[in-house]
Image 1 (spheres, rainbow, N blue to C red):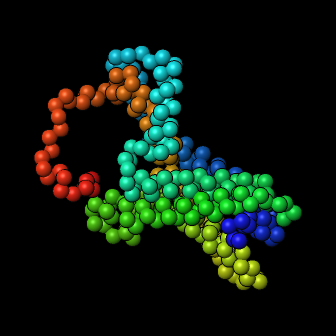
Image 2 (cartoon, one colour):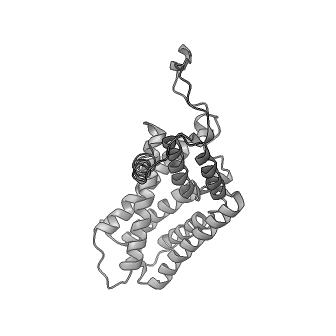
Image 3 (cartoon, rainbow, N blue to C red):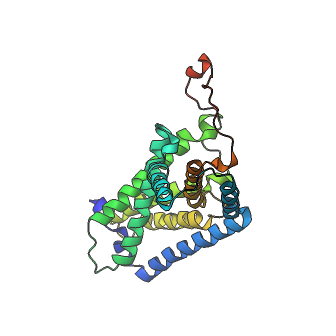
Length: 267
C-alpha cells in the first residue's frame, strides 16, 4: 500500500540523502531567521516581558513554584494541546486536525529523511503511515478552515478565494501536504520515467520554501507566541494581576432574548 512506503527512500535512488537532509536543515534555519526578524520588527517578546513586569506590581498573591508549575501544566494540557479556548465545535475540530496532522507530517518527514532515506535502509511501516496520515489530516483540517470557517468568509461574506498576506501560512501548509501526498502516490505508481511525479516533487519543494521562507510575512511565528501568551494570561489570573484588567462584574449577564436566535458568528 502507498501509505506504508517511504517516498524519501524511493527518491534517494536519484537524489542523494545529503541533499534532502540539507534541505530540512535549511528550512529550520529559515524558521529561526524569520522568527527573529518578526521579534525584532514587531517587538512581541519585549511587550510580553514588559507586560509581565507591570502585572507583578498589581498582583494580589505570590505564587509558589508548585502553583506556577500547576498553572503552566494545565495551560499546556488544556489551552495548547487541546485548544480549549476555541470551545466545542467545527472551528476547534478543524484546528486540531490541522495542528496534529502537521506535527505528525513534520516528525515523519524528519525521521524518514535522516534515518531511512538510504536506498539500502528498511523503513518501519509505522513512519510512512504517520507521514501520510499527518498530511491527510492537515489537508482536511486546513481545507475545512480555508473554505468554510475563516472569519472573513464565514462572517463577512468574503469569497473563499480572496487571499491576503495573512493567508500565506495556511495556504502553504495545505499545499505542502497536498503536493506531498500526490507526489508519494505518483512515485508509488512507478510511472516509468514519466514527468508527473517530478512536477509534484517540485511543487512540494516550492510550497515548503514558501511555508518556511515566508515566516516573517505569515502567521507562522504566531505558533511560538500563542503558547507563551496563554501561559502568561493564566499566571496573571492566578496571581490576581489579571494583566492589569479590571475584575469581572458581579452582576449577571443580561443579553436579552435575541442572543438565542442564532449562533454567534459576527466578529
